[in-house]
Length: 111
Image (tube, helix red, strand yellow):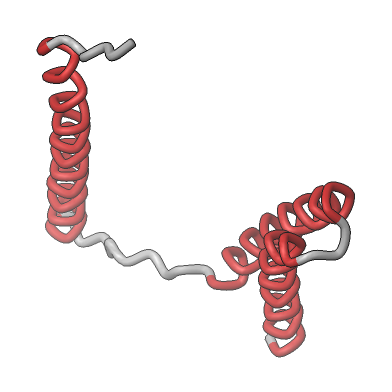
């Protein structure tokens, strides 16, 4: 049985992604506009708009998240298909998380 979607369904399938992309762009535009106005007001009031990026906290958070996700995926793939190439799907985030935590420890011992 060949069923051809109606014209209305074809239009909806075409329009929905376009509307989603446009609305996403509108949200990003207004966020950037609001952030710019906020920074300009801070400069006018004599406040410093610069907030330094805390690499230590970021590396600890990203490391823990990657380590835990990688461990769970590694265990899942190991139980599902044994030691095969699919195990790399868990070992890669696990090793990235481990390296970020090592970086965090090294940075803390240096400071």
